[in-house]
Length: 488
Image (cartoon, rainbow, N blue to C red; front, top):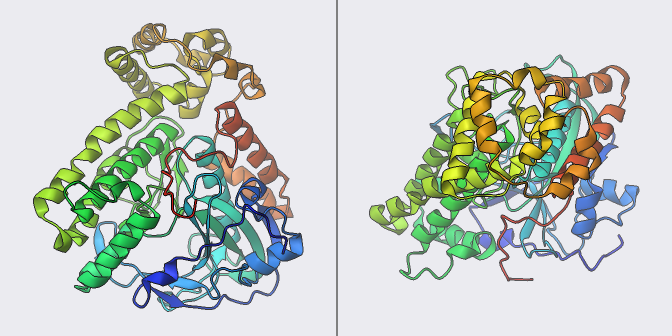
């Protein structure tokens, strides 16, 4: 393969040794048809020059990358699923395939799979991923990246030529294997596993490994309490993540502790949804009948999950130290929520009182209005300088009444943060880029019926154009990722 100076292999996970993973082999698929290749991120990490044949060799046949992991590793973890503990988890249809340093910011990155075959943790499953599931993950990660959420990236998707039986899709359905690019795969549940087995040695080892490679700001705490410092840092990262979901209007759907990464990066997209309109009770998963993971409950659920992480580390520190570390979540969440809200609305901060008044008025208007969530932020990006555009658009009928007038009064006091962005082609459109379920189905339907991938390709271009207009072009720097320094 062509070696780029940007490709900096650094396979670190094997250093943890026995008890953290199982060596596995990838499935052999009947065929491999490339359906998605994330060229911007491939270029950034030094794999952009791979030919199509080389891409398939590494990301469909899973031949090892140069100087990288010689064999895939299925990672071990436990977790709370819908807040019930499950000690029978682990990578059941995926594995860690490669690790390398991000040349731009020094992070240790993983290539991990989804749908790559059975492992010791498959629990009777076939280890496969439906093609629709792969398409949905592309759409989720592209949209979240464009909206500034710290997220894993869909790196590659191959259709694999198998037919799968699923209870939640018309079957038989087509199969795929996906590769995601992530800032690590150490989950809250990774720590829970070793706490469950009363293994303080491995617990300490995983803690030190995570701080060294993923959460460097927790290193060398003044008190010497590494576990509490780690929980504080992960709480702050998770608070920023939760706030970014809320402002993006994103509902993860399965916020189990095995689906939360200690880096504060969002990943593993199953029954996700984006809000059609502001609704705290909106749920993503049809099986979430009690609304545990509803849109408005996500911050509380993330805080609960952090408490489980802290409990797993309680043998390494004191309860008061952990409680103090966890207490940072609410303050960071509130501050990040306000920052993100103003950013998405495209207005500059004016001071605590004015900023808070704007948020209250906007949320009050959204709560009683039927205007689309994405539409609202699109129409009013930049503040009152966009009034003519907003009042001339298809949602104009919604912009009336006392709640609207309260919102406008608060908005009129704000200045645009990036007025030059309003000249971007994206803001000359009639409609915002959105990813409600109807848009997802409209993309999948031509694939299912006619093998027509042009709507997906068009949507990815549209999403990336939105990200560029918002100051977040694809494969841009990741502001939520502190530079570790090691290997940089």
